[in-house]
Length: 361
Image (cartoon, rainbow, N blue to C red; front, side):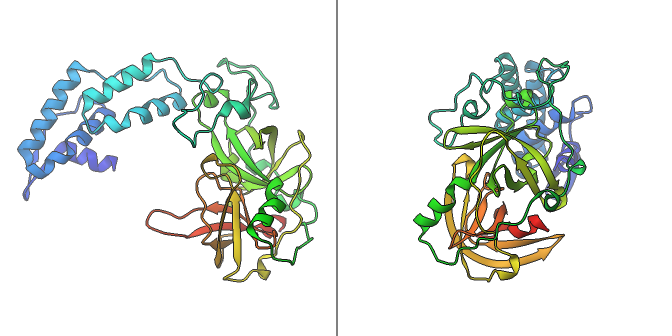
């Protein structure tokens, strides 16, 4: 997309002829991008209209110069840019003014900023991270003022899930349950997971949110993409929080294990082997889509998709961002899979879970 915009910045299209556009060699890539976005709609009116728009934008740039963002850390820069990005179409003056205003405001922190009361889906990170988000992490010298200095764990240095997990839970239930009874049976085993790279990232609310399923007194299954490179990991359930750490994982297959010593967990009692699953079975997904704790949805097993070192259970049970690491259960409350992929744009009811039994293989 950036290459396309750069080409548009050099040439403007009019009918079937290409004409040289104004000289913007002295502008930065970002400034050229913003002008191209602002003037893109004028291409349909011809080369002259496009060039006139570019000239107006360049004149506006002189009156509204781009503020210096070089001193911002990457996380803060990303947040500022995202907050102003919608103004690119309005023009470079409006966009740069937004950047300037954003820089003048004090940085929001998770400790003093409550979620927008008008956003019913907002998650108050203060509940989970509290006043000392990194207390369980290893302390060290801090050059950035973020104490403690967090030690990240490389997935490649950890054992595989099967090397850490004990015997697979094998108390398989055989009696079908109503959705209400199924939820009551497994709800204590489903957790919200929130993970961030550092206290600096927490201050700009760069937090990954997912789910996890307890399979022993202290171990939980989740997806690696929820916790990878994020050293501060918290579990949340019914107003109670606990520190967790990444103790095993296989990044290639997106299977990771968390451990908490802050509480004794209620594990699920049975895990179905993928060979016992049948297309058409009734299943239920429980996770935390967009932070909505322990959301229940239902569907069918739509397919069994082996490949790439793992087997995916395809389901029509809806899942959304935040569901990753949650549980897919059969109608008896046995764990079938760990939900990991939701429908992509243009697709409907094509959701996937990693076959849960494969965490033990």
